[in-house]
Figure (spheres, rainbow, N blue to C red):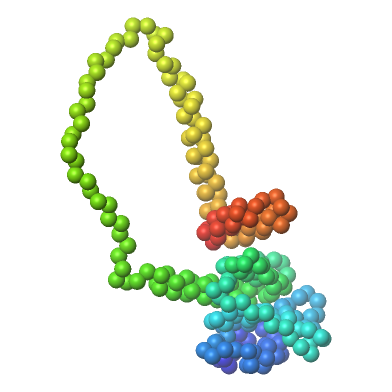
Length: 241
């Protein structure tokens, strides 16, 4: 843990703040749990008791000082409960946000940009490791997933009776081609609009996708959309992140 803290202190960190947090973490870490990174708030004004966020190989911990710094509140979330993480950089710093599978969203603002990027990178690595482990254990190596469709023998071949074609002598009996083309055009337009909407999602940045997800959450809170519609929108947006 000391070697990890040395790397952290080389990246615009406050040694006193890191020392206080690490002292309290000694009694909170589980067996085989290692600290990956610690980020501390750095507001424009002097912040005596800043909030901090700690990421380990097992969870995310939010550290909030209470009672004028005499006590500390710790809130932790396991990696298997976290669905996504985001970083949004501004002029005075950056925001690190993560969402849980229970639709909870937490944001720590006024973080130095370098620290926020480190948090985001570490979070993505842990989520990728979790996804790869689930994918490897879901399907056994020796199991082959195939669906065999029985082929039924053909007993008889049906004979198709030939019908003589009748020559059309009156032009009024011919169906106009324009009506057929008009019926087909709306279907092609709808299909092209669907593809264009998918292209728009795929071309959006991480920040734009996150803002779109927040807008859908506001619609759900205001009762403008149903829970099922929000879950579908959320699943589609997260697939592009």
